[in-house]
Length: 335
Ligand code: SF4
Image (tube, rainbow, N blue to C red; front, side, top):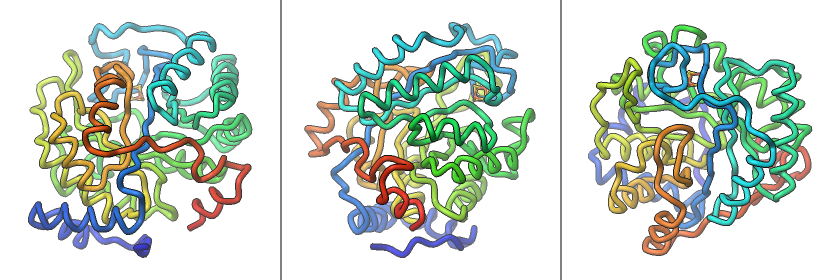
């Protein structure tokens, strides 16, 4: 097992990021094999339980109310619909369902009560449940934990230095505070970012430094490639190259050796060969299902065909135990 470090400097991460590409992939693949079963890939599926109308101004997001993106705004879904989506995802090989709501923050109201009921219902299907609901306080995190929430997603998106260019309606510190609240409730942390926002390479390195210097590394780090959406301020951003994705994944794998590095948005544009390179570089998780909140994603069938071709197997739910119930996950979180 590789030593888990929390003292990475920007210089050291930059040195890793700029390693000649094949050496970088080789090193990341080696660390992946030393710390994980590289052939086991965790599959998450995402459902938008409340879409659009968000008061925030994230420059990449079609769900922000202030941008004209034609997104199909809907109020909170009925629990039955979420359970049906979870069953479909489970049948497609997913071990985790992530429920997203386009909120600035969680409020203690009836919609939150409904989300709590959804968490309980999906948990009963023996699936890991994740939520991404915006900012939340300690008491709300504890309520989600008590309902059986496994993970909470709250991305840093970009570096602290670059944050104001992408989002002005909240601060980086707000973001980090929510991650701390999630940690305190012993919920596993999912936090990563997006490349292709017009950030510099230094911003990517700075974001990885923040993530890898947290008191505990996030259990999941999604690496997203921007999918530019018409009507958002970033609509004209050029697509990032697959080499940038590979470098980002490999560097994340090296600095956070035990984390699930998730190949997330942007997979639709990648060939199987390109995705295989990402797995080689240390990706150990994907999002599956036809949609990622509001943007297209490969289907479960396409993914299963790719898994078969590459010799990958879907990871089973709760391999580290259930949060608040199993000793193993406590040990993992404390490692
Ligand atoms: S990313 Fe989330 S917080 Fe930002 S505008 Fe979209 S839904 Fe709102």
